[in-house]
Length: 219
Image (cartoon, rainbow, N blue to C red):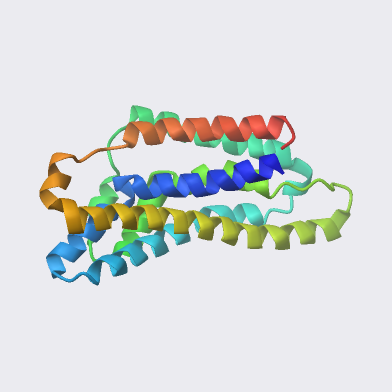
């Protein structure tokens, strides 16, 4: 129960963390409201960013949820996923440049931009070790029936994990965008702009280590 709580807590925490990170798009929501000079433009922009992020999470998690091989090779896959996340973190530590493709997406296409940003920054990849821990299955002897049951349950779990994570991400981004837009203003944003690339890369490495540790200890 404690492990399950920690894993679901990690889903929510990573969502808040993604939402706080300006690289996930909340400055675009502020920009949309300022350019259109309408308060209503900001929640619309936040919603589009959330939609793109959700689709990116599902795009990463759904293939894992459909793998019946998880029953027999669960630990090995979780170890591999953890190592992959660590490798992504190390890559981002070495390469700090943002993908050029993001600069070519029109700001009005926020859902597409958010989807590509989440994919490029490894946001969905961060959830894989956590998801595999939540979707762990103890009964390895039930054959095809267990495989089908695991697959059905994991598809639902993938959507729930992606949804809860996206809601946390959207809430965090919306709160920051609202504070900036209504109280602090664009000048404050330009003067205090912060970049979490270093923290993001390190967090990927830590999540990978967490996933590997949980797999090795049977959680």
